[in-house]
Image (cartoon, rainbow, N blue to C red):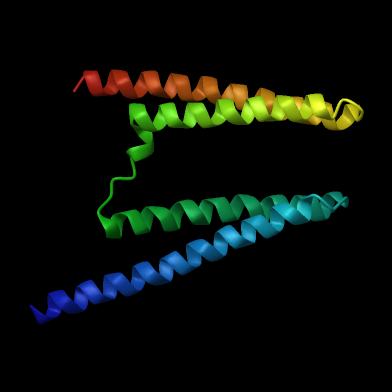
Length: 142
């Protein structure tokens, strides 16, 4: 019993440290994203993109380890309901971006950029709809 208690305490400590690291990675990502808005040097921008890409990967790895400690499968987002929520979020983002683009009609460059992002959101919706079909067909074939 004593070794199981020590093992549980060890896992709780590991989880706590991983949570701190997860939060630090998110904070770093936000910092790099903010920096990107002001940096014009292409080399520096490239470095910031590398830091962002690595940070996303780190968060994915840490989250996977944390889910393993929790005993979670991590597939909650890949349920029909989870995917539908994501589709709703993407639609809201698309609509908000289009509204912002309309409001920025006096700045054609900003309006075009916002419209471009809304096109990405539309693409995300299609990807999620296809993912929903895949999840549905996988669950019905079990």
